[in-house]
Length: 131
Image (cartoon, rainbow, N blue to C red; front, side, top):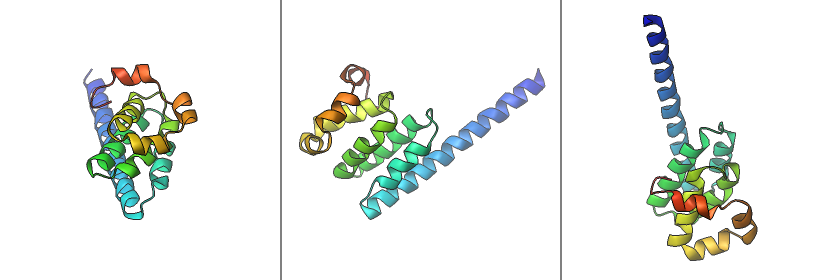
């Protein structure tokens, strides 16, 4: 029993370290996107993650861009990265939030095909401020 607890503890520690590493890598990609005014490497970074890691990284990146008042970059990022995780509540939340707060930017970035294939209003309505 003690061995099992030790193994579970070790697995939890490894998972926590992996999450911290992923968030640090995402923050670096956000900084790069802001400096270069290009979200392509950030979107590519999200796309390379495992499915279960994408929503958190997506939320972290979108929130950092949004809170830094980089709304055009945030909308561009949301548009590019949402196609890699349309099933994620975080993606649905950010699409909805961006449309509500920045309608002009999203009108230009979220074309009808994107909204028809990616956006799920029913799911977005269920999401709170943290997706």
